[in-house]
Length: 257
Image (cartoon, rainbow, N blue to C red; front, top):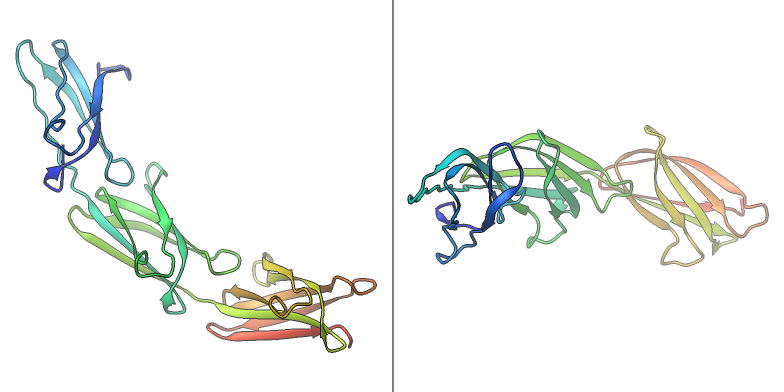
């Protein structure tokens, strides 16, 4: 077995037609001592299945009706030629951390996954894949609520590099609480006004490291509920806030008013 013209590691299984019970098999590895893999089997007709160990998605190839004759040597060779998929993710124009999942749209199987992080060592994320079409799901690690983006029908060609880029947009929302001029412990819940889904929240505590509470959110309109944790009756305040891409919006809720 070869990949891009070099000896390549693959698993091998030999079957009798109509069965899935392997009568011979093993690995080719990447050295001439094992590649080509050699099996002594009785004369007959066989199906042979090979699966790449080196390419994401466990690329398979199958020969059917291979005839093995008494006293003769039957040879088969296959070259797994992969393509390269490069995925660059940014947020507001800067390298951004996101999870990556690559799927075969026909089988819906995940063939590659990983993260981009914020370093050029990992971003763009690069995957070796067999030629074909793929769907890709990106999910931001940095944005509250996990903003997603989907690419469909991305074509990877043998011996070629496919490059895709996505930029997530976000805004910074800071929500704090005070009482009589002092930081106040409060719970915060932020809801997307369009989808009615919570995108995050937490506690402010009476601590400058967490008060105001900071969330990175997609630009848009939000409903914010702030509830005092230790004041009698646990009063609450509700706000509607619009945030803009790349901007910082700060609201300090004063429970003494």
